[in-house]
Every structure is written in structure tokens, then in C-alpha cells.
Image (cartoon, rainbow, N blue to C red; front, side, top):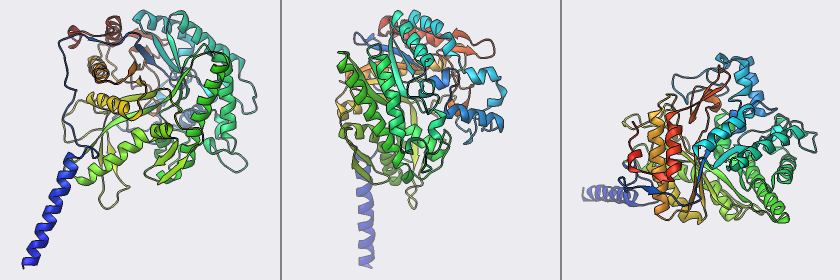
Length: 508
């Protein structure tokens, strides 16, 4: 009898010890109740001089269709009427685009028609005081055919005109080289049957694109982002099957694509710097990752906290860690190998941040965890996308990135969807997140930019045209008419003051 009680006591002690360890260990995330970071609210929060106040767009979402894998996906969606989605955003079924069939062919092919209205759009941005504008070069616009050894003259001329228009308006161009989308020919199988980034000639074709970009746009462009959100591309395209190439693999089967993206980044980084050095020019080259604030769904559940730690490291930090150290270390697959030339190939750390996510682990099936965009049992502020708004998460990520990498940090995307003309939700979101950036800077983080996603309404990938992220509303069926929302006026005021004043903090 005494032995049985001794076992019970020892088990209880072990459980208590583990609970205490997980409760106070910084390595296993807790559920912080802080919605915003503690700090001053009744004083003016001034940003550093020469801070970049920017806006972002991507070519595929805002410009006319090119000969890309995404355009081929759209055509197939329309041909087979795959428009299925649940009532809420974020519930579009794989292989579908939400309500895509209700829009005219003109809208579907032009998106937001930025390539027709770029002069007007850039002038509007300049009038707001915006001093940085992030766009993407579309590989398919420059190399629409696989047999091309030189880029399309029309494509080069278009991008040169856009860059020149920005510089004429004293706006610094930020250029992304790969924003999820490839030429359609890139996903034709090679002789071994491999497609996309797994083709034997994938990096050869990528190098041709990078060489052309460097040749034609240095020194006109100094700020470069090689890859946009590689983990989103990997997970969305190869695990969930919602983005082209619409595949559904196990996590352990995407290593070749993961490695190819790292090697593509190395090639772009080295080429841009080599050409810039030869021309006695300056370039600033990095990549940007999509980061979320992860929290255990059940604060008391040890498995949730363990799994949250794994998910956070995998999603937020592993790709950047690889670039920093030169080693591709993927916890979920056990991969650990050196990529030649990779170490240190980031002049800055790019961060895109939107929301908080919750992680629910499984004790008996550790790899079958769930990530949720909201806690159904909590009353927390959410966007119309169903994302949990959590400004404190941005501060936390910026300050952690400062400690991990000791490099300049660029916030290259942050925003929320709100279709109302008075868009109070977007204004509150904007103010709260700009404040978090200021607090991170005051804590020692070398943050040099804040970019709103997005400047104009555009195609929100598989969620279609109804998810409105723009500071500027686009009337798609009325010749793409642009109308500034109230948030555009607020952002202009923030820029004029180079920060936040007490009078701004409660938008009416």
C-alpha cells in the first residue's frame, strides 16, 4: 500500500515539475493576454529620420495576366467553374477561387490594372507622402517562353517606366523577384518528369532571369527582395494544394523545393551584388518571410505548448536561420546540411506580419497538429478574414529578430481587410501596429521601414476580389476607379508627422 502511494506521489510531483517548467520556460510559448505592448500613449511617437513609409503590391495580384502558372490556374478555374468556398474568407476549397466567376473577363484578366494606371497610382502615393513603393517583377513578363535567351523588350520597358515614375516622384522602389508565381513553362515536366523548382535546369533558368534583371535595373534599383514568404509558397503550393502547383505532399516530401528556393536566393544575392560592385553601385538585398504570433490553444496542455514551439520555429525562423548560418535545418524532417554560399546572404531581415494563430497538438499523433486562425472560446478582435488581430505579436517578433540576427529589419507587409469607406477597423489596426514598430525601435530594434499591404485593392489569391486590403478602393466594374479610403488619409497624416500624435490614436 505504501509503495502505491509513493508511486502516486512521485507521479504527481513529476507532473507538477513539468507544469512548472513549461509555465516559466521561455522556450515553450505561453498565451500572453497582452493585446498591445505597454508603453506611452499620450505623447508624440517620432520615428527616425529617413524612415521608409511604404506601400506594397505584387504583379500577379494587381497587374494584367501574364503567361504564368497562376494565370493558367485561373483559366482552369473558370473553365471548370471551381468557385467553391465557405461563408467566411479563408475557407476556399483547394483548387478553387472564391466567387471568381461573378467577375467579368476584363476584371479577371486585368486584376487592379496597375500596369494601366501606374502613373496615377504613383502620383497618388506621392501626394500621400509615401517615400517607398514595393512591387514585384514578374518572371513570366520578362521570360514568357522557355526558349528565350534575352528578356522581353516590352517587359523591360514597362518596368523601367514604372521605376522611373517612382523616382520622378521621389519614391524609392523596392523590388521583389519572386512573389509565389512562375512562368507557365517552368511547370512543364523536363526529361526526368520533374516540374518547377525540381527541374534539373530550374536554377539555370532562374539565373537567366536574375542576370537580365541585374543587367537592366542596377543602379536604378537599390532595394531588392529575392523571395516573398517562401514558407507560404511551400505550404500553400505543396502541402495544402491551394496555390499552384496544387500539390498535397507530406512535409517530408518538400525538401527538394525548400533547398531549391534557398539556392535561388543565393544566386540572386550574389548576382545582384556582383553587378552592383562592378558598376560601383549600392544594393541592399534580403528576403521577407511571413511571420505569425503563435500561441497554444489550450494554455494548460503541455502538448500544445511543445507543438507551438515546433510550429513557431518551423514557420517563423527556420528559413531565415538557414540564410544566417548557411545550414538548412528543418526540425520536422530532421534535415541538416550546408548549402554552399548561403551563409550571411541577407543584408536585412524582411518581415511580413498580420495576425496571431493558435496551435492544438495531438498527444498520440504529434505530426497531426492543427493551426487555427482564432480561438472559438475567446472574444478577441478579428478581421473580416477571420484573422485574430494581435499587435503585440509584431513587437515581439521585431525584438526577437533583433537579438537573433543583429541586422536592419524591414517590415515589408502589414495590413488588414476592410471594405468600408470609413474603414475604422483598418485605421485602428494601422495605428496599433505602427505603435508597436515604434516601441520595438525604442527597445533597440533597427527597424527601417513600415509597408502597408496593400496600396490598392487587388486579387487576394484564392479568396478572390472581395477581400479588400487597399488603402485605395478599386471599383472593378467601373473602369477600375480609384477612391482613397479614410485609412489613406490617416496614413498620410502619420507620414507627415513621421510618427503618431496623441490626437491620432482614437480614429472617429
